Length: 114
Length: 115
Image 1 (cartoon, each protein chain N blue to C red):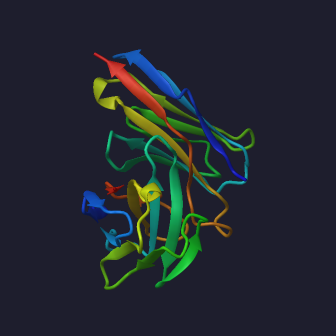
Image 2 (tube, chains in turn purple, cyan; image 1 turned 180 degrees about the vertical axis):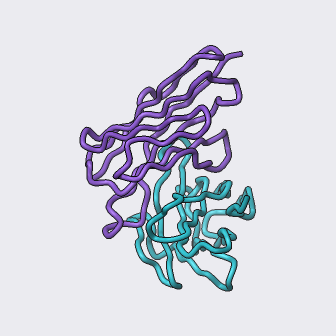
């Protein structure tokens, strides 16, 4: 059974710092991996989607990498800002022909201090 | 930018009552989903829906739950007789195609409180 784990559970950094959020999954047979941002009491905003054949994706100050064989993904945030404060969720999708669902980690709660 | 819209944003109900949560997926999307997040827990998959039928459901999605696409734009989740443990944030999501070339798009959620 696929399990997704995110470390650390919470992170507090000063503004301007570069940071890395970690996601690991137990079954390397995935179709893709998606990183989301969740603000308190709000919905999920998609940040980056990495297909299983890709190694990384970039969007602005965000860079996500995927090492499928080791069951790991990282989300790198450059030059963090207070507006980046949110919970970051990682989710994997099993192989396309077996399932339609996303399996989520429990998230990393990020606080960027001014 | 197109988005998934959910109504209401908050719903309070008494235990045993029926509730219907509504969603308007992105207009050219074909696959629809419901997820939920109990406070402090992970986001959990409930059900996926395509071509007017359920394509996959989780163990959570028992006979108390049903989904429907009553017209060309709305997608609903009905809970027939709510329990205290149904209190959660319910998210609707949609995707353009099965391959999810652009990923899964989520609405802002309906916070359901069962008293």
